[in-house]
Image (tube, helix red, strand yellow):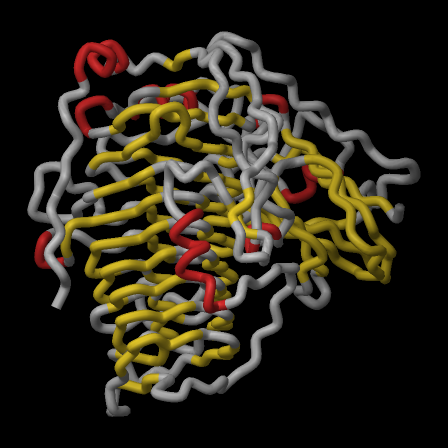
Length: 518
């Protein structure tokens, strides 16, 4: 039975918040909390996660101001660091329109955008009954914020139910030092605290607290939604959660150094072919903390170094396959990034001192002792500062192999041609039918290629978000990343190279897809 939790709403905002309700983006001269040294876990893969690093820094005290900062950029991928202070709620959040954003009035919407950091500063940032939703976006950092009491039903303030939700071709998100909490379960109108659906990949949740909810979070919305994965959870506290800590359908997840306290019905639920690597966690006063539950579609796990303190287990059944009472591995999982484990015995203490918003962004280096970050804080700039121009990609030396080659692709908008991407003319272009699609350059015989240069039209500069470069002969991914420019990869002999756009802020226009041997 879930333990009762009192709903604590914020007090009246007073004169300061009334002034902030105008939605102005403010200059913040005083020192503020800085983003720590860098992403960890799977968020370091696929080109890494840097958020708005290198962009201008602005301060926002309302939801409207957050949206204004997004919409005021030169393009949907122009980097920006948005420092948030105060309480963000439905009363101070409105929809803002612009070419570099797609916002909504009932949530903080990061949709079809990239290169954004949202960080709580000053006396703190609280998103009260207002969720943060990420759609068709990449390279996002969310840090040092509290999101609470977001409802999906039973309230005029409902907006989908997830405290932080990711959906539809999301890549490279780092959520760090956050507090995500509800005041009940589905019957009270709440849904998940941290959900990932419909092709969301390369995500890390670190040093965060998730509490008082029926559902901690899921990876995959159904047994057929198995395109999600490569998720890391480390140094988090799951407290008073009924289930889904998390629910993993397909894909791969790595859970290490988390403290699971009072999981009332089930915990890590690996199913539908999912693989979970579960290292040096501390499970306490909980039930069925690992296994496959509520389905007959099995999942898998590799376990090592965990502590099971007062954990109870159900008997196996038709739709229940608990890993305990003596958990053993039934698969192996290879982890591509470096990490240092704290001993499981000290996890409750180190997580207590580091996890959640407002904890000074403290981390652990594997010594079971909190470490204070020393990164300098970037100086914020005024809202009218002009953005830094995006430099045109510089072609490497040698002959552009695309000239005189063939071209094809997966889809194209009306009035555009595949051949326009290799005609040497920057005024002609290929555009997909929508925001995603692929275009290829091909040769009659094997050709060695190690560099691709993607040039957008001036009118559509910055629209290209996430992408992959494929060996068109085999389908092998040669490299991936975001934004147009010079792309390099190990020299490969092939007859066809494909540039696949997987996310964009509007309809892309590829003026040239140049290829070079070196």
